[in-house]
Length: 174
Image (cartoon, rainbow, N blue to C red; front, side, top):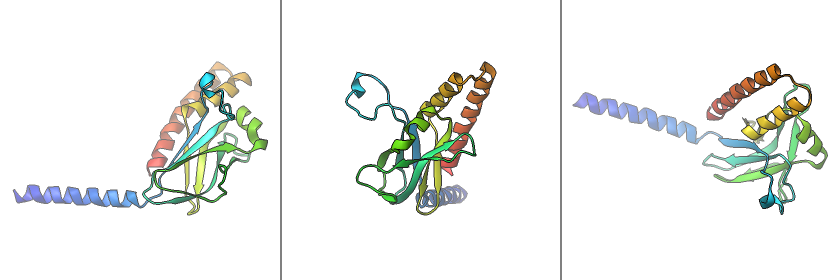
C-alpha cells in the first residue's frame, strides 16, 4: 500500500513541476486571418485585409514589440504590422487579452499578392512566437495558382504547408 502512495506522490510532484514551469513561460497565440466576405461584413472598413490576431495565453502581462508576416522567400524583408489605434510599440498585452493588427498602408498590396511562411509576434524579452492558419495557406495557394504554378508544384506546396502547421504547433507548445 505504501508503494502505491509513494508512486502517486512522485507522479503528482512531477506533474506540479511541469505545470509550474509552463506557467512561467511566455505563451502567445499568433493567428493570421482573412475575414469572410458578405453582407455581414459590409460595415467593416477593413474587410479584405489580412489581419493578425495575437492572444496572450500567459498568466502575466507581455510586452509586444513587433508583429508581422515572414515571407516565403528568405531574401524578402518581413512585412511589419502597425499597432492598433491608441497604442504604440511596444504595447502591453494583459493575460488572456487579444489584439488585432493590420498591415501598414504602404504594405496592403504586398500582403494581398504575397506568399508567406507564417505570422510572427516578438516580445520585449526577445521571444518570437509564430503561427499559421488555413486562410494564410489558402491565400498562398491562390497566389501560387494565379502566377503559373503546376499541379505537381501545388501538391508539394500543400504537403509542405501541412508539415509547417505541425511544426508551428510544436514550437508554440515549447
